[in-house]
Length: 310
Image (cartoon, rainbow, N blue to C red; front, top):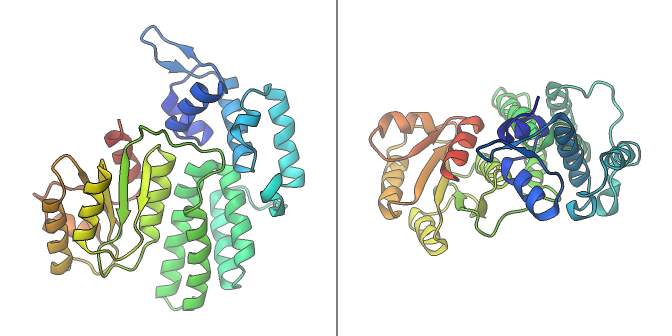
């Protein structure tokens, strides 16, 4: 039964924005339309989208494969699984372990690779997770749980600081590298992503940047620990649609509360301010009347980005 573009996005692992770009710019597929001109995707269209996602994440350029027959896409996908990706990505060989079926399997082996200081193995695992589950699935079901597990193990004393640094460096590299074949429209809304001064934990901000990019936003990533005045100046200069901050530590800090108030005052009224991270809930409780969008998970953030990006 044909489904909407939102359902096609969930089933294929591609954002609605990427699907539209591939249709309009590359003629990758031609979905049917309802009487109100809504796109509808049949089972074959979903299959094409999955195959195109696998191929582009494996190193193929979308322009080279978009118009190929579905059977040809299947053959190329099978070649990826047996020989690895083409071109620069050819060094990525798929781990043949039969246990890599569910996201939890990747999280478990990712933690094991971190314990062994094996950055290459962790990198291969996360690359395969992206190929197997798509960018959305990897972010939500592998990266987020892995970050949380590593954080718990580190706090419990079961991981050394160097273990955490190995994992963080690999995850940072993956999050800051756009998916091969992805496109950002020139007219896409722009979001500034950073952490306030004193906040050095930036994995949450990087997750936000990767997710926003995948949902069709143009990203200006400023790194960690930036003064409020600098964030506001960048947002004004870039004419950004939104600013997103990640706050992890400390919790319910009066200094950070003042920074959030000050940033909201410095930003133009039409610029939305999004705040997420482990400490966000406490600040929401203390700042209930401040016009801020709060995100307590990556799912919350995605919903906000989809709503604000329309």
